[in-house]
Image (tube, rainbow over the protein chains, first blue to last red):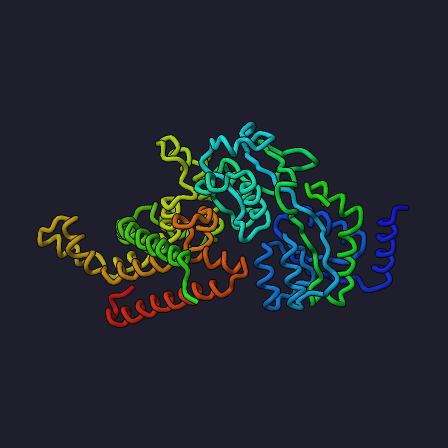
Length: 248
Length: 227
């Protein structure tokens, strides 16, 4: 018996013995697809219910600061959970990294992006999409990559910025921008590129995109919130997270 | 704290966009409103519904369809590409087209109501005085519908200033080209720069209040001619 099975077993016991609880979770937009899978498994295995809201981390921060009743935040970065903790809006000691995002340069046109990213130098495109570096960790990572390549000022006039990584993907997926920096989780499924061409950007080219989870003050004594945090660390959830193109 | 140059740039762009949208809308909406106010064609109802559609549709729907239409596979995108203009998404022109569609009902409806309340009678009188239809339209119908035109202009301008969803979808947040006040505020809030957000947001509230106040004062002054 693997440790996680024991955990699930115990959680199952707990769920039948105690009242099944409900947890309200704010989820970063880029983690939408994996979280839907994880919460389905979570509900099945523990009997607790997770209510999910998807959106940008910045918006969630504003809402939480103004009394939103979310109990757990799955952030797109590690700064926001740290900030919430400093401001006394979360339960201290609950923060942990549930996923590490991977950045890819992607185009829906096959053959446009080579596997070393040389297309950035040849510059044979009109527009390149990235998430707003001020708002989205994936955008900040993209800027770091371009700075490292010394191409920032050359490419800046061709930038179009998505408000978040989902919108950035939309710009590229609709062909309005020929290529763009998106999350690997958006263009990979089962270890393969779903369409087009891509450069898997080596993780050494930018600071790791750590996505942290935290229990917020309203979730302090909620059994389902604690169970979800534990569940995110088990092998089953981690396997789902990896299959969507995140590191751990 | 005073507004930054970024904020001033966004304000200038917003005013530019709203002004151009208003001018173009008045030119487009007047003939549509006239036609709707006096036609008995069976196309009246469907055209009227089509013109009103942007009022009902969520801006995100409108923005998404515009993005797809302006993309290289969309009808608009193919047209502009074949003309050698490139695609319109992420350009000021693209934003202008989006704003015109988005605010169309706000321009058409007041003008249409003004024409309807003026009625056909003055035009008939003009015709008995041997005025040609076009002449009568410009010298009789249009001046009588002036309150409606003013309402249309104010509403179009204000509605374009308040436009957000469409800009977010097709703008790409390019400073000086597509980053308007509403998206700038949104960016500040998302980036947790609440002080800057307050500056611009407060300005928006004051501007909107001033516009609506002007509108209601004018309504009272012009009395019952107003739609």
